[in-house]
Image 1 (cartoon, one colour):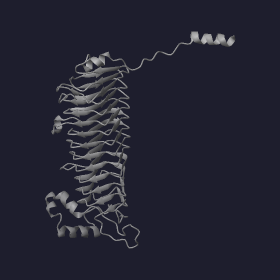
Image 2: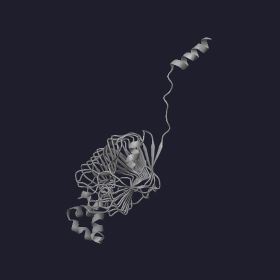
Image 3: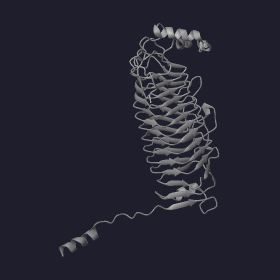
Image 4: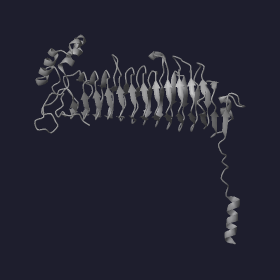
Length: 414
C-alpha cells in the first residue's frame, strides 16, 4: 500500500515535461499562398524550416531574429536590386543554405553585404552562390559559426570600390571551409579573430589579398589555394598562427608576394608550395617563425627578409630555380638557415652523407647590386654576373658574412 501511495503522489505532484512541438515547414513559392520570404520569416516560430522554391525574389534587408533554417530548393535567386544588405541574421542557431544572392547595395561609408551575421553564434551558411556583391558574407561579433562551400564572385576591379568576400570582425572560433572567392578586394579578411580554422578554400583573382590576417591569434589555415591575387596572402600583427599545406601561386606584381609576414610572432609555416610569385615569402619585424618543409620554386625572390626580423628558422625547405634565393637589407643576419636544398648550390659532398661539405651563401652579389641599381637587372644572365657572384661566395665582401646554410642538402627533400 505504501508503494502505491508513493506512486500516486509522484503522478500528482511532479510536473510533466513541457510539450515539445515538431518543427514546422513553411513553403515559399512565387505562385503559392506564401510568396514572400519576409512573410514566411514573420510567420515562422523558433526552430521552423522555411523552404524557398525556385524562382526570383526581389528583396533586401530581410532580418532573422529567431532560430530558423532558411533552405533554398533548386537554388532560388534573391535579388537585392542594388539596395542595402540582402539578408541580416541576428539570432543564434540559424542555417542558410542553397540560395543564389545577387546585387547588394554599394557604398563608401557602409559595408553592405549579401549575408550579414551580427552578434550570433552556432550558425551555418553553406552552399550559397553570391554574385555582384559589395561584401559577400560578413561576420560581426560572432562565435562558433560555419561558412562552408559557398561561391562568392564580383566584378569590380577597383580596390577602393570593392569589398571582401568573407569578412570577419571580432569573431571567435569560426570555421571557413571549402569556399571559392574571386573578384573581391580581399578574398578572406580577418580582424580581431580568435582561433579561426580556415581550410580547403580557393581564393583567386582578388584585387588585393587572397587572405588578409590582422590582429588575429591562435588560428590555423591549411589546404587552401591562393592564386593570381594582387598580393597573395598577408598575415600581420598576430601570433601563434599555423600556415600549412597551402598553395601560393602566380601572385605577380610590383608589390606582390606569395606570403607577407609583418609583426608576426611564434608561428609555423610548414608544407606549403610557393610557385611563380614575385616574392615567395616576405618578412618584416617578425620573430620566432618556423619555416620548414616548404617547396619554393620559380619565384622572383624566394625570401626577402628584413633586418627587423630575427630568430626565424628556415629548415628542410626546397629552393628550386628561383631567380634569387634570399634578399636582405642588412650586412648582419639574425636568422637561421639550416639543412635546406638549394638548386643553385655548386658545392660537393666528398663523404657522401647527402650534405654539402661547404656552406651555401644564398644572398648573391647581383641581388645587392639590383637593390641599389634596379636597371642592372638586364645583365642577369650574363657571364660577368656569374663570375662576380662566384667570387663573392668564395670571399664575401658586400653580402652578409653570417647568412649561410652550413648544412645544405645535396638532393631535393621529399
